[in-house]
Image (cartoon, rainbow, N blue to C red; front, side, top):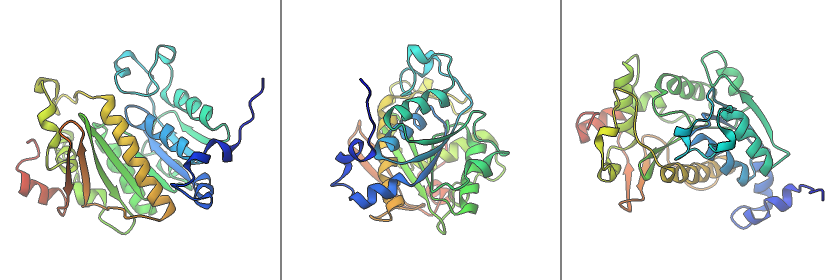
Length: 279
């Protein structure tokens, strides 16, 4: 039996939350996602189910057993396979009409212009510790006037910051400059969540070390991130609804059922309010 794909039927249950006209707008949009791991892969599949029509995806890594706890593409059948290939196949299984350009070397300083060519929105899916290339991607978005979303999985919660054209930039907020990687990591963590809502649910602090570039993770955080990022993407791409822009952000922690708003003027304000970035 041959199955025939119909975009209108596949995404018909979106209608009501979006109009028919808005669904067609989403079909014409192109989203770039760097990183196909813990959050990037589920970002791709969530946005594919929203009906986005085209993607640029980048990752240089392959799936391994240590990915199983959180990465949507990590299965026994995908072990050793490139993350971009696996996730692209999964997305095309949802919508065979998708246009997906794959960047198998990951996003780099050399391919940023091609990665962001004709892109309507960037969603950050990079590993937490990929700080220098994250800095470069957000700088490129600022220069190209591409709205950019980062939603970080923090334990059993998610922290959102949007960087929109003409508003505060990633660099103005985090002030990475030429700082050492460890200090960038401290600034990134503290800037995402000055409230530190996630701290009470960390039962073994020895598993977290910014200096050694390691930390625990859960599928819970990744799934929350994808829902939040897709909602922001919908609002940005359809130009409807209130979109918070940095320095304003949100951190929701599902474990404590708490919600905190980030409303400082950047990392300097956050540090003054919350102490050193390592707290």
